Length: 191
Image (tube, rainbow, N blue to C red; front, top):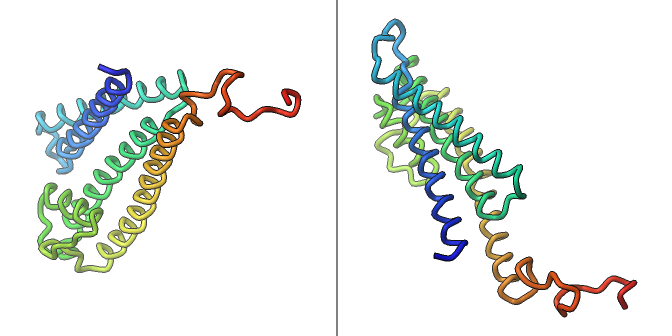
């Protein structure tokens, strides 16, 4: 398999592992006061945190070893997106649990995750929606943040496409590194 294919598979595996660890943290986080006896949830939570620490450390070592390419930047943005989804889901769940009536149709962590993803996708089915002022303000903050993250994703993706087109035309980083290449601009001294 080509080196680029292996790199893609490794990135996809890291991305999937990051998402799995974040979901383990989300669903395993013990939130009931005085009920630390939920050992299974605690084990899943600790395992998710350990996995995230390992994955982030590996990603940092990868960035230090060599400058990030477009694929690595995309993976970084996706990792942030995963964390944002889990953060807002947890926030919505806690708002509804501590301030009943802020949402209509939200009662479980899965409902909160569903609402967060539906809001991110700007779908808005209406089965779960913000009713109270606190829930509406947090939803507006999420929508604003989502627009920024989507803008960054589009910018990274378009930069990656531009790099590939430039490389395919023989003017990019893959070609044109030797002095005799016509695609490399000459300095004033070489002329």
